[in-house]
Length: 138
Image 1 (tube, helix red, strand yellow):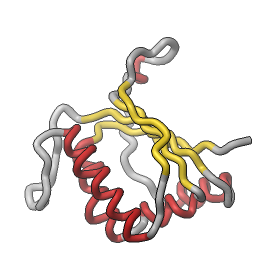
Image 2: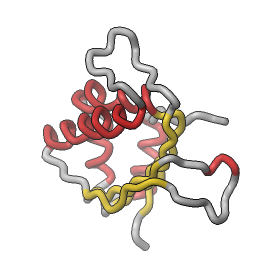
Image 3: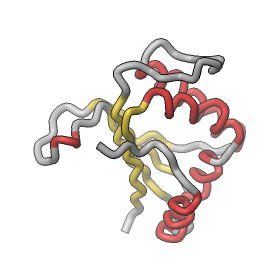
Image 4: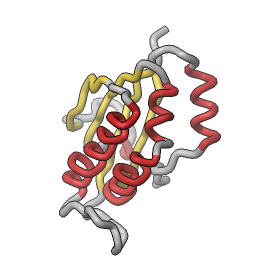
């Protein structure tokens, strides 16, 4: 199974061109590690992957948003109940759908110092796999 946890500038550039200036809705498909894998010197490890995500990552993400004055809108967050059609690899633990006024807002969050210090380490420590899909209204 390929693991997707890093975002690079090329992917962000391509997405920005495809999405343009309008609102964007991001779909997050999350698969957690059995145990969180924090670096030994990390100052704020959480005891398990789910608390690492919801307390660590989401908390750090909110700090980054507040520092930039950006207010994303959580449209949905919940656990996958059943896969009616899909592949064996579609067994996601959680799904979150978030709306941003502009893709540039999301990009500013993801490239901010606060995000990289407070949120990203948790994401890398607790997620086993991740899909991050940009959508926009027709």
